[in-house]
Image (tube, rainbow, N blue to C red; front, side, top):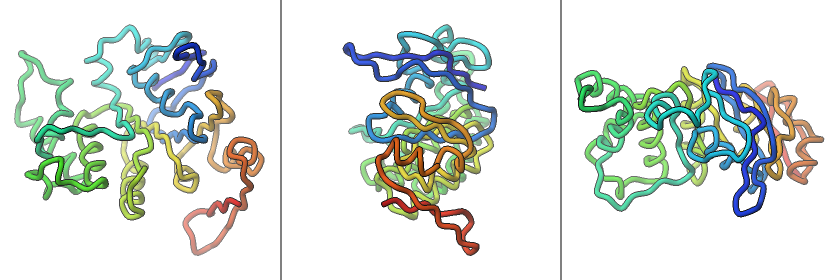
Length: 250
């Protein structure tokens, strides 16, 4: 689905991403983990085609993203940043409708099909009741749901999210993470909470712009990796009453 080949990125003379290569499988949820400043956000922006690498390339279904038009990329990849805000007086329904922009043109105007897609996206995020609310009246959790509804309305093949549960209450975190892991699309998501990250199909661990490890969560989230990358110890708690092991850090 999407492949990274020998990717490298520098900014103002500092290397933020050292050469790395990996591929993302169609339909999987790949979680990016690592300390603050490890390069997760930069890597996501490179994968989304928002930033341009100094070396290497991002391939989408075998085609270099840098050779594709912004419209073509937007029809296949949707990106949700950590924080997106606006001072414009925009209504929730209008914000979600923006997701249809890559599919519209003079020869392809808005139709009932677009209405149905927007309504379905809002239903998935349970925000139909917010339709006539303005952006400024929404809570952080509500805004994040609107963002995700917008990108679902975009109908991408690949959804890239940069810490979508950051700054949300625990109920909103669990709801959004459950939605993400249940989506019928390829998802690449940076996560701060390692217990949440353990729910992904695979994990990619980064440190100082380098790829440290990639694989199944139980492999990547090893005590050795956690100690090396995060500088803390980890104890795995297995309880039959829980759906999955809990990681305790000390």
